[in-house]
Length: 393
Image (cartoon, rainbow, N blue to C red):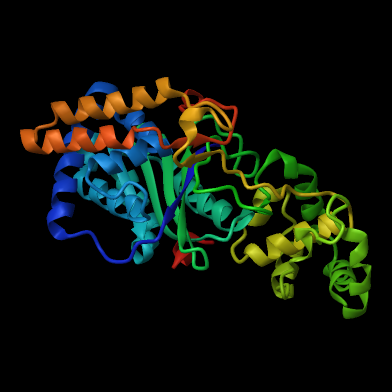
């Protein structure tokens, strides 16, 4: 699975003014028409799944370049502007309650595109699992509140979703693209964008966590009585004196993050898992009701009892932040940035909109492309081409 990125954005209260939103819809429709005409609906979907390109598009449409509204308002404008029958491309879901209609909208548009029942079910599963991974398998403190599922009449799909951290007042955006599918729990992260790298993020959806994934499945498929024994070993008060054995050797007075244990385990759910006997980790986390606490508890037991350590590294790779131009920590791929900007600029110039709107849009794009991008990875940007109960989390 090619997961194309993440972006961290400050939470800003309020709504976009009606006059601004109407212009965003008009401009987004014009840019969409040109890009789909020039490159096709699949390529337009790929571009939206690129976090940097999406961010630039949001600025061109006239929204604040770094706020959480760049996700919700831009997706809303695009969804209103795009006619699935005309463009061969659709967007389902949205913010809050709108996300609950994602499965129904996938079914409706899937039938319009004459997709088979199996294909529609596959798309619905993909929507649900993308949300499950970012909300449960990757625990970075952001709870999803926005989920948009994109797909074309050729069956290519993507996800743009956003989570909120109520303590830091930042939102984090996650992008997905269906090409080169390797599964939902084996490095779905390709180019991750964020405000900053966080410490001690549990990432059970990476190849580094494969040994822990297998151990978690073995634990869940074993008699829950044994799991209760392991759980008691880690949580009994009199065992707290053994925490010295789990100290970071380089920082002898600083306990490692593994000790942040969930308060409880849903033992009824563990019995259901035992009865179901999932074959692999994806089947395990795909089960309804398997949430962050269950995932974290199993990961900690895998680590501390059985020695199979999950990844505790934030999968972030890219950040919108001043300073990338100096090449620290890595150079910015200016060519890829310029190519992305050129596609949007061409779309604006060819769009059927007023000259004044074109001038303002291109000016906003130019301001955005100023050096404000830092790369946390050796990967180049060019390589990146390559209430949620309703969707079952």
